[in-house]
Length: 253
Image (tube, rainbow, N blue to C red):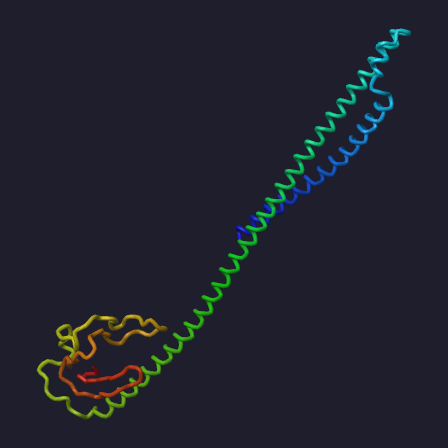
């Protein structure tokens, strides 16, 4: 946009200069026509008077003083005509220079207008590209919101399953264990060897959710082992979570 404003300003300045040059050219053309008419009159008078007028005056012995004076007058007239011719030539030269400047200035304006058009095209392309990007972002956000809704629904479903299972086994004894689950913090093995993708309490990529467990990436088909004594509460397919195994270790774990 700055480039477009700069080009607009340059075109306006060049157009003003072009108008000034064109006005100067019109004035020079008027001057040229006047000088041309005057020189035409000079040439016509010289032809009427004859080319040998000066020679006749020089050879006129009747009145030498008059002849000398008239010869001087003719010399003045000749010098004045020469000056007029020189002025006419200078006018032609100036007019030619102004005309050249006009063509150059007009060419510059055309170049700047072309650049302006190109800048506007680039601006429109950038605008269209950003509009497309915004549209894709809107679609992505809509899709992410849909995924977030699905996750929240799955979370609610799992919580309902867990609560139902807790209620159903609340009166059952888990059996004997030498060391309670809570006291083995930091000593428990991993249920499967793999890479930690998400840690407990870390922020979820969608919305304001946080991870309420560990997420491990393991080899497909790897055996998964219980990490402590407990009772299986759920072992089945659950929505997009896939095969889900829930083990109660007591004390709310």
